[in-house]
Length: 631
Image (cartoon, rainbow, N blue to C red; front, side, top):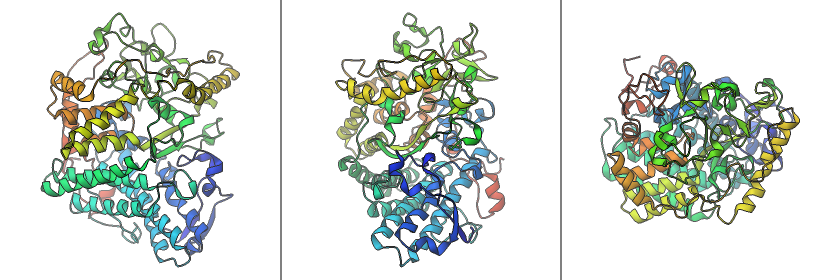
């Protein structure tokens, strides 16, 4: 690390951590980058607050580490192994467990996160010794610094298993080599201590009212997550390190206590509509606990003006005629997992205009009995634009998009919602604001439900799931259609006006939200009843409650980076892959929607390989069991 500190980070238009307006973002506003002595950072409260921006900056993509932190390393390790998200080209190995220690995405994420941890350690070292920062501010900044460090270690621990733990005062200059934590318990205890301290030091509301700062709610949510990971490692996921059922139970009890604090605080509440969580009008809404809000600001004109280094549109859009690169497709197995009337499906994705999908031919998926929502069939409702190139032989009119390899003709509308599919795709139409949710209230609800089931409180567990399902089926929208339309529709009509003004006259002014508000069903099926039937029908080996918690996670968190980690620590991944993606060996997937899984699931590979670059530079670090001696 350098002895000098770059004082200040990003200007307001970058919105690096999801701040909703420049009026609320003043701690990010700097007129220039100033290099100052490290000690000057702690001369007063204002300097210390601004200095912490150097750590917050690492929540955001950084070109020094190939610039796609927050998307590619996280999608590839947090979603693709579930097979619910899929890829083609260079990325396809992430769907068949063929990733390895030379995978560039792993190294990029590893370097980015350890750079963030070193920044946090340096900052906390200086803060600890400072006598000029007032005690109240010092306590809050310590809480934020430890919460940020805990966040980055959480990603390492949930991605790679045991990793080297650099503590306050350590960085890769003074500690260039370090062994991994000896046990999973040792590693998770380190993370737990950071989040415990942060939760005690921080308030429910962010410091100075600046959204994007770590809060008590963020710290408690990750504290509970860390306790659950420790419990998993001490029981089902120990990978040969030894079991300790008694300590694991204590961990679940501590996780439940932390989660209940969040639920009882009154700080958070579900957005009335699931689908609006990804609208610009929902930035840092009441449901958000920890989110990175990407915004291009006014820079719509060229690649060089991008303020977000994540090229979201190209990673997630339909390749044919819409500019996508193939990093993100969604499976038909996932698409067909929803019950009739569950609006999370249409709020998460759009499909190609596959002829077999029509109300008179349910043969492709008998579960639906002919039900489908026309608004997402072959077109993008938020953009009011068709998918594909519009010709009779368009590839999107098949279950699988043939782009060199088979890929499902389904694309995420969580990320691809504000970038035109057709207008000037490689020029001014590239703009794509999007939230990357790390923790939402539903994460807390389902984690709490899991703890309740494990600890014998079945009634409370089912209560949490049923509450989430009421929102999923639009019941929280009923009676509030007018106010929701008034809040969320104007952006899309304004977007249509902009596109039309640029020469694309296809977009029209809407009178209803693209996915109309209000429920589609009279009554939502009881969760226990529904999942008991599904458990028996599909032959899951897991208990009914575990199926319920994790199938709800699949529906709620598709394309959110918590999915694989949550399903892994719930010890559900193997059951999910084997049951939801049975092995097939189909030579031609043209006329069937299902995924061709032809490999055997290996649970040990859910701990990703330590990057070979790290092993070469740090001989004290060893490799995970599934990859040792096999690279």
